[in-house]
Image (tube, rainbow, N blue to C red):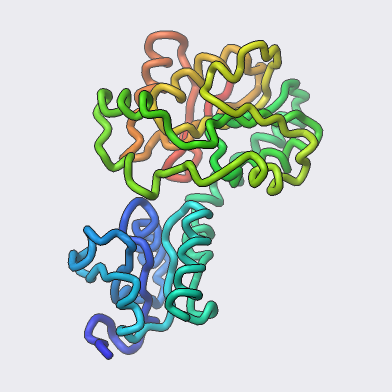
Length: 299
């Protein structure tokens, strides 16, 4: 066994996932809270990363995990779908005991918690202040955030707008024109692995949910609703800009729009969409939500 990577007085961990924001969150959390962990390697399914270094640690193929001495494996991807797939890969393909795998390390960080807390507080304000209007999300994927919206607003209709087939090629091309790199094409950002049935099964009040499948804003044609809360999480410039154009005029006074990926280093189209709307159409009052990624807009 190779034990040269870590000191003996710390818990030896292998981080599964060497791309995206996941490993950054793991590293920052270990450092911020002084956790007694020492990363000895990163594992990843991307063959192009194997043999490279990340912060001085080797990136290995998953099959090579068993050749190292470690205490825990931390799964770093922040999307629930990827986490579940990796957990299944490790336990079934490589026979790694489930108790050696930490699936909650990333999800218990400020990245998710701050966003959920902000939603809860916004919902409390909306309800306490008597703000009318339904709720919606543009960019649902597997419904992870939508189910929290559904829970916080049990008496309001929740409109769920998504292609449920991933990004539009035209929208991707538009983001390239806006300066995005090919990172937005990486497997981590493939959001086609979902469907309406799966999303509805996750909802606490599915009877309140209205699926609007297809390309936005065409899917909003004929809808006459006003809104008290909207989550915009479509990632790319065009749907985010169209989302603001559609929802902000229909947002009730005292309502909120949460814009995800405003600070994301790969999805720069989101920030460009907000700034263009703010500079050319209508001034927005927006503030950071504390999750290193989102802003909240209040009307």
